[in-house]
Length: 423
Image 1 (spheres, rainbow, N blue to C red):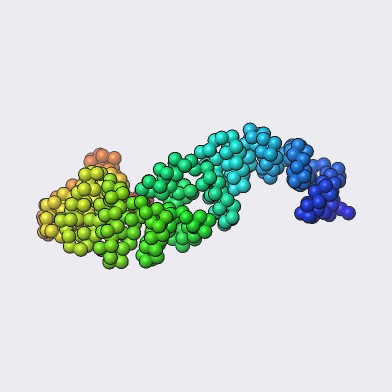
Image 2 (spheres, helix red, strand yellow):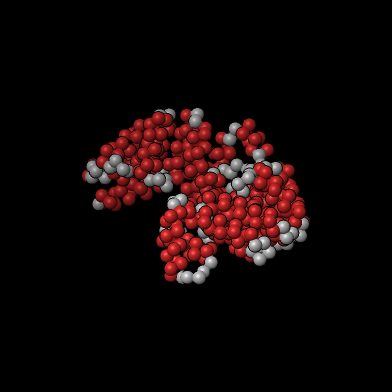
């Protein structure tokens, strides 16, 4: 019988739980091939299954002497060391396994077990979260669910009580590290993959309110407002005190034309989170859509009292002032919005504000001056604050295209600079 056949025979005996027979076969292979790391690993596993932990550790160590990057040997030795209550040694092995293979879900899970046994609960929870995320990515539903159960068991009762009262459910899988990534993915247009990932989250944990909310947001981006509302409804069944869910359901209802239902949701959200400017702006938009311009202005103003740098509140209030033909106030709000968008380098929204200013120029001629000042401000930023440079560029445009308005020359220079910088 060849060495390979002998090795396969040992694997089969181990599969049939004939561990002593497997050990005998692997020992013969090692005698003939003393550098065969897999034979040491498999013999170590057989020793482990027989409860002979020290010989198992010895075999894993021999394998690592031959190959210091043998990930499975580190992981297996960590398991044996946990059984021997050698937690520092186990932690060292599992860290080495993770360093060698960053997506090793089982190693993160084992690290969580070790940290839990050492009494470091928060570290254990963090490791189980990482393991759950990796299992989820690998579509290993059962192991993902087991990690989630470990996390739930480790949550202190006091913390759980705080979470029940919180306006935002703390998800088992980190919002910052996972759900936010999915929303970014959807924002970039990959909505189907985001939905598929969220479906896996909900299969692993059907009680994850944040996952339902996240899927609802993605479905809104896809235009599936009724399905989104169904997800928000499910999220509220799991946590009826989540202001973010009420806000998003309100937006979905508004997009379906259910203005009364939308306002009811925004009102409920504000009872839970009265300092959320996004809710005031969203409710203001619904008031504006229904012709209640004064109510809309009141909400935008409330948002600005909370956050004086909310460009969206200024811009939407400017629209409401325009609808009331209060052009002076509209221009002032547009100017403030544009200034903030410029500071944030949010050029798409900045241009949208300029377009709104341009539309009301005929009704309020002073707006032309405001637009000129905004263009001048933007051009100054692009040339590092040196107006002499800006003026030379404008002069060149005037030489090439005589007889145009001043705003036209500045706009052309801005466009050239942004194109050159790859904006």
